[in-house]
Amino acid sequence: MGKVKKYQDIIISFLKEQAKSTSGIDSNVRNEVIADTKSNNFQLLHVGWKGAHYQFFISFHFSIINEKIWLQWNRTEHEVVNYLMEKGVPKEDIVLGLKPPYVRKHTGFAVA
Image (cartoon, rainbow, N blue to C red; front, side):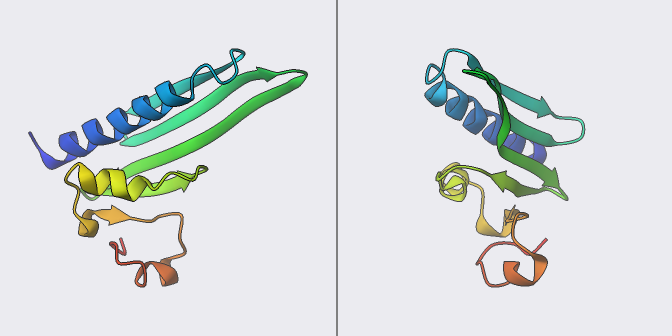
């Protein structure tokens, strides 16, 4: 299995686990895993109604760019990078895209 395919599988598995673990919290809000393996973008969305308020937000967004996993968005308290490393992704293949470029060199993860 190629590196990109392996990373796609890891990300999709993570998002499905997160979607399952948060399903049922509100029966009117559904979780949707969006996996575009051609453009290498992956998201977990929450969509629906909570009372009179429409809910639409992204919990996670990942990209795979130049064979590295970019964490573009994390709207949770979950330590996603720990999960990625437990699944065999080395630190040098994880980019904290949600951090400014000048900060990334201090994170211990890939810069780009």
